[in-house]
Amino acid sequence: MNSAQDSPLSTEDAIVKVVHDAYSDKARTGADLSYTFSVAKSFGYTLEQLHSIPAESHLGLSCGNPVAAASIKDGEVVLDLGSGGGIDILLAASKVGPRGQAIGLDMSEDMIALARRNAARKNLRPPQVAFVQTLLTKPLPIASESVDCVMSNCVINLLPNAGKAALLKEVHRVLKPGGRVVLDDIIAKKPLPDALRSDLVLYIGCISGAVQLGEYKDIITDAGFSDAVFVDTHGDLNVYTQSGSPGCCPPTVASTNCCSTPAPSASKCCSPAPGKSNDSVAKLADVNEWAASYQIYAIKSGEKMVTAAADAPSPLLNWWDAYPKPKSSPPNLTCGQVAALLRDPEEVDYAVVDVRRNDHAGGHVRGSFQHAAQTFYDELANLHKTFGLKKQVIFYCNSSNGRGPRCAAWYQDFLDEHGYTQSRAYVMQGGAKAWLDKFGEAEDLVDRD
Ligand SMILES: C[S@@+](CC[C@H](N)C(=O)[O-])C[C@H]1O[C@@H](n2cnc3c(N)ncnc32)[C@H](O)[C@@H]1O
Image 1 (cartoon, helix red, strand yellow):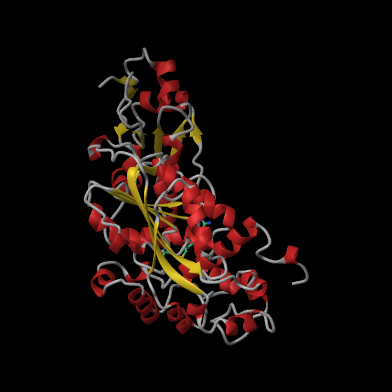
Image 2 (cartoon, helix red, strand yellow):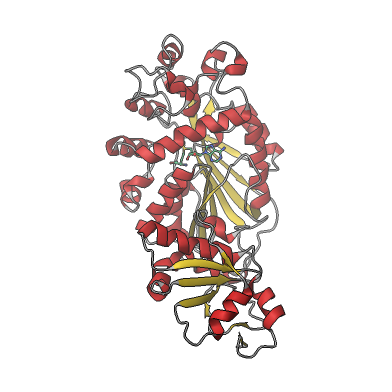
């Protein structure tokens, strides 16, 4: 590395990318069970908690146990920032119950996919449990004043400093008045020398990005939280060194820049470049000398809102964020082509699916099957049982841009993933609006119920 500009940590975007790549690797490769249990136990998880969730949901990346301290109640909405494999959301899910919601946010597609698989193993799905891929350095895809409790476990130290401050302001925005935040994080005990601050392995390992107590307090206060409580949990950070790394995330495969000169010693592959980080890591032999695990509690001021769960606004700005992004782009059929199918008495090898929610005013395509888009993804296997023998399955909603194309793409993705070729998805161009504009008076083409 010749200059600071060339450093993989030289810009905020570069920091986020390095962290993204390392944690995505972790999600793909998993972690050694005995290591993850010893990290989790060291930061306060009980065996009962750990045995109640899939082992793949804890990757040894935590530095606290926010659920144990958050007093989560039945029916509450809980948000976890940087949810990883889903450990804390899956523990929170049993506390919020089916009337509540536990939502995990993470930037890594691989982490989100892993967390969704872990939730599926427990038979948990949206809206009770949702994992959403998003950057924590951008505005959160969560409605204002919609969350009872925000938690986070060993994540905020990984954000660039401006991102830390912006995120805490977002936390304040999304919390209901009287809502609470419980953050487990690493705090620096003293300033790290520049050489250690710019050390990739230490940054990814949750050490180099940690700020000191005074700075953290300023960030929380500036975000709008007065009277935050900071508790040193005295977790032993040296537990991480069992993995050969001085921090919470031992890099695993050669995808980050730090892996360009692998050395055999420190981790499976992503060892520090010789002569540089090796020395730095050696200096951190006792991680507890430099950093500490803290739990931070704060409450958003204001009168606690009492809203019946059924009337509460959805915390997710976009319900579809809880599901994988569609990969395919099914072709369009015009309303005229669909009408020709309906009017052809010989033609039976098709189905039309209306994925509007409750807005069926004006009628719908005659004979179309009604299904709410919000629960569509979780019903794909059943939908395939119903429509899998039909050559053309045509989806529509109110316009050509919304739920119809999304559900059509999910259906086509399902067919592709399972190698089913008998059935194909299509989108009715212009949706119900175009259909009713064109054929609203044609009794043979419109159902009014
Ligand atoms: C140390 S791990 C902690 C994971 C989880 N909280 C746990 O305790 O197992 C940090 C997590 O935060 C996510 N993360 C880090 N920086 C992020 C950012 N800027 N935006 C979104 N997610 C981020 C990573 O992808 C990773 O899953």
